[in-house]
Image (tube, rainbow over all chains, first blue to last red; front, side, top):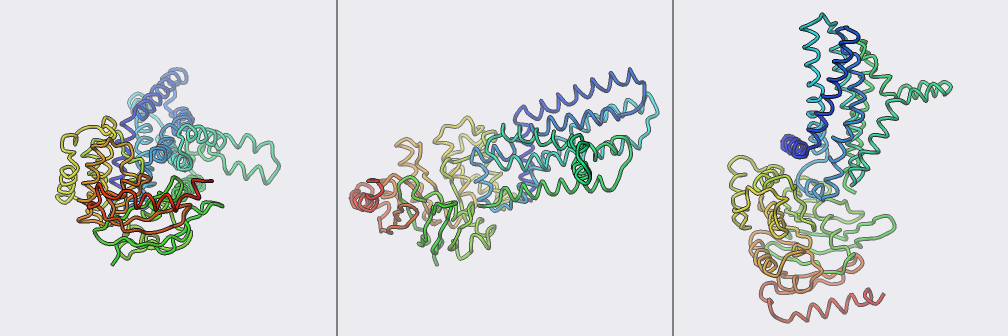
Length: 232
Length: 244
């Protein structure tokens, strides 16, 4: 019950500021541009390039969704109001995660129009499209959980956004660094790479290990967020 | 039974002991004031009482419930107004009160009745549809008080509630506190002696996290009277700090 009450409050707060609208608008304009250009150049009924571009856009835009979530509550003092009400930290974190997922889900669902265009004018292979969307949602959820954790550690939303962006960029491309290292360090770093775990989804090859990786990151991020809120 | 009971309550932040073995009780329908200079531990004690912070040692009990072991149940019995009276600026007054009521387990008819009662008691009916960020400081303070009394708490905890209020609003606040004390115990902090003297039944004086004394004050009956007794005591007890 508390989670629903808090989640409704979070969704309203997200859409009370222009940030959610700006994020959605930038996301759809950029992905629409890429879809149109790529379709006319390659003339192939595929969304692979859209999935990779969307993943990069998530890395850039998710910090804008998560930066306020806890940092602003902490700065304005409303976190004290929430934590002194009969509400558990887990409920607060769950509500913010659900609300953020809703915005992320809206971003991803806006791209469904491209799949519809492909279905009308071509014969796309639906397997990679389904897996691509699953990968996009898992990647987005993982980024949101890490972003929420960072937001819970500071009272400054700009700091939260910058640190999130830096960490996302590092985790996305850490396999590049891995190639410079000897075994077993190379494998360890590749195991942390968001790109390495996302690529199979985008090209239509799903592995349980990749699903497990993203679920682990999501749960660890949310757990650490709850710990960051724990009463001192 | 005491509504609030602190037993050798301590809180340490790193090397600094912010609250040092403080013990006192607040009885039903009593206004209990916490007095002390800035940094004496008043707000930390309130945060320990409301469960926002966990004690390093000692216990806090609200109506017999330990605020650490039975946190959610104990917090249900508390209404809290933090020092800065934080609110959600994008919400309307009525919407905010309904939100806080739901968090405290009120629903349906009970929620509507509680919101109406709080709006009426704090004279907020005319601003119920106003967005909070457009309210004056005095109104915001009232909204913050309204959210704290929605669920008719057994213990009302107020941190420097007169901060930023004009003289008329301070007089209204005094009246309101006496009214609220008819149904709840009230724990209130202030660094303004006359405020505690005019509203509290008893007052504790704190210095450097230690409880120096608990004095009978007399509450509403001493509105214009011997303001000097508590003032003299306060100055005597905190003199060493002032001289440092």
